[in-house]
Length: 243
Image 1 (cartoon, rainbow, N blue to C red):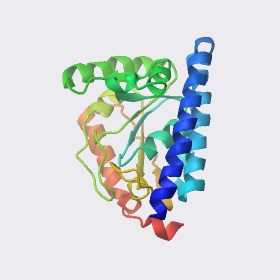
Image 2: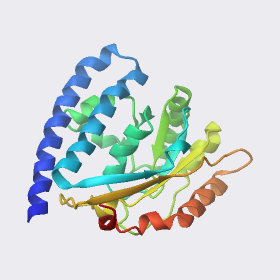
Image 3: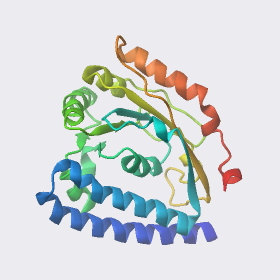
């Protein structure tokens, strides 16, 4: 019961901060260059992570930060919750969000997100979505923004993995941009499909860049998959022992 109450308190602050930040973005973004707009978004991400720790006792442990480059990359990450979308958009900023097209219609948040020029895809049209990812993704990388992609497509349960799609690898190969691999176990503290947040320490690891020269999308995806398998200790980590 206590965890539910703490989770509700988190969402109350989360909602207020999101609305206020979205309104600020809708006013300011008309006058701020695209790459500078992510400063505001990063501040929101940092607040959410801090508020999550204060209300729900969720911390995080980081490894491999030295592997995050200063130039744009395609970030391939495992996917278990909304937590990693918030953290990665802060850690690898400036970054271009990829999201479902319908999310842009969410009041305030979606309206503000439109001004960040995200890659909005229609999942009901896979071929069109794939073309949009390649075309817009290359442009965003050329503009100096990294692109975060979750090859599993949808969130996996804590401790599990879904098959990896090749969309992110196709973008990396097409744009001749290296891949930054990421693995974590956020699903233990921020489970999917529930408001409940559980106290613990999320383990995040960044790997060394995966080069794409001389490789096709299958080989890059396989290289990412092999790295994930070699780092499964992160996914299987007991978050409660890390508090």
